[in-house]
Amino acid sequence: MSNEQSGAGEATPRPRTLVQMLPSYSRSPAAGKARWVASSNESWMSPSPAALAAMADSVQRSNRYPSLAGDRLVAALADTLGLSETQVAVGAGSLALLGQVLAAFAGPGDEVLYAWRSYEAYPILVTLAGARSVEVPLDAAHRHDTAAMRRAITERTTVVLLCNPNNPTGTVLAIGEVESFLAGVPGHVLVVLDEAYVEFSGSSGDTVPLLTKHPNLVILRTFSKAHALAGARAGYLLGPEDVVRAIRKVAPPFGLSAVAEAGAVAALADTDYLLGTVAAVSGEREFLHRELEALGLRVPDSGGNFLWIPENGRRAADIERACAAHGVSVRAFDGEGVRVTIGPRQASLAVLAALDEPGTARCAETRQAVPTTYPHHSTGGAS
Image 1: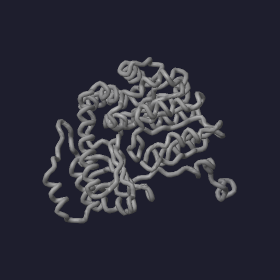
Image 2: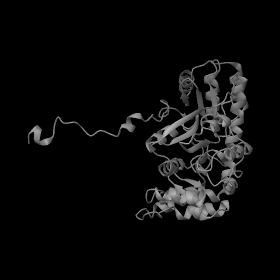
Image 3: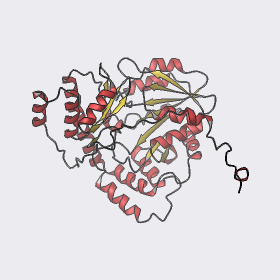
Image 4: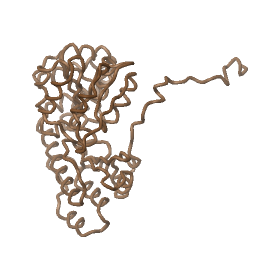
């Protein structure tokens, strides 16, 4: 066959123009080499034994499709949270559900408003929806500037994203601040309260009652963080029936795997294990925060399973390299700061050694004085 007949030399398929505009999701260059992975906000502890057993059992029936809309998990969440099943949608992580929200409520000509810096997937998903991102800078304390966000809402705004606790800074809007913000948002604008880390903030039950007061509110949560099911991919959305109905319409069929659903249902029921995980993470977060400040670093209080180290005169890339040299991968945001996922004590000590002068007595004393195990939880190398 000739080149003319085969089409050789002709233009190759080209992706849509917006694909060229997509920012890349970052990754620590040390993530695949480090002893402790503190760059992806994963749990260093394994999932609940009940969740592991449920997933193993589910694998035996992998020849069958899962339910169309994650019916078992929807029912379990509705029962646990005191909601109707028509107010709950589930999917392959809260990120997938956010993509559905934007597919249903944002498109060409629309604006999606969010704080910045915040979760780096936001501009990717907004661009994919064909909408325009409107980024409102955080305030000097690395928190959402809710007054500035309200002022930035225009007639083209269709969705506002509130990441609370905020990723990567860990800062938290109190329930009163969230309510005050909602009161100032026009009713036709959908507010998405992204609570991926809410269990670590101590306020996991506070926002659900807001759904009855604000029909333009939806809440996103995940099993990836506190429930330690990041690899299974399960998340959920809570909201008004009409909003949930629209989100389900744009969902791909069988979007939640049967294995993930089984693990999530079991993890949801194992509240004792969840409380133990949260207590272990919170305790280690307090230790690392205290020790970082003892080194002279200004670190904001965090409601997540991570801490934010603003550059404070030291380049984020330099901090990332220093931590990698001590066996820890962290996430650098060049020109802004570094996010460190909370891990076992050995990982915290490695971060402190990287940020301190090598071999100082203070680090050596700290290393000898702290525990390295946590009750009924594994402390494996990955964090």
